[in-house]
Image 1 (cartoon, rainbow, N blue to C red):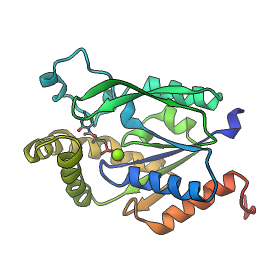
Image 2 (image 1 turned 90 degrees about the vertical axis):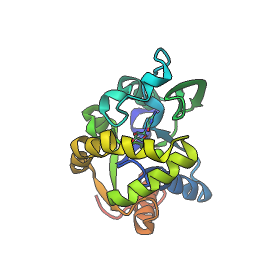
Image 3 (image 1 turned 135 degrees about the vertical axis):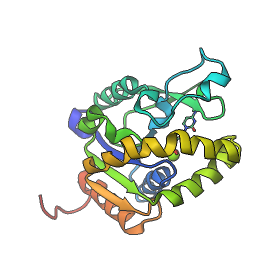
Image 4 (image 1 turned 30 degrees about the vertical axis):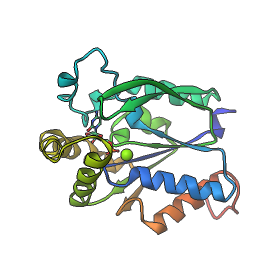
Length: 217
Ligand code: C5P
Ligand code: MG
């Protein structure tokens, strides 16, 4: 696979803004339309390994700061995929706050959708991405979703979600994530259920794959 043949689409936005849903809806619908050479990579899998720390220490990490991510590894993996080779993506546990023993073997794909809160804050990731999207959902909606999700799926108490939100999630959104919106090619209001935006992204991907007529340059 040549460099040009792998297309990376970065989807950023606040925590619980609907990035994952947006990405998985596009993937699912394109697969039903016969586009199978497509995969999703989540930035969350690239949180730094913290297995050397005790759990009481790991809970104190600021997970909304760029330093929490092993971005060198993410970048190396994207370069490897662009070069047409497979990568082993680490598995991450939000309950244990570190990597697990598992890995996800990921074969190179023609279309790679990358999703994560901090993607557009890194110049190198902006460079390697062919297209970028910012999911712009109001923060109150994000918070309600996050509270529910973190309690149901990530083993958190209401108190811990609220404390973390005040201490890091909201301040880091304002400091890093929100300002990165300016780098997006497309800003999507309301998140993963924005039907027009999903259709537009799908159409653009089909166009990039040469499956639709050329409209303009
Ligand atoms: O799926 P979502 O974009 O919400 O995932 C990113 C969020 O996961 C961050 O806002 C971060 O606070 C949270 N996180 C966490 N505990 C970890 C790792 C990430 O609460 N161990
Ligand atoms: Mg997510």
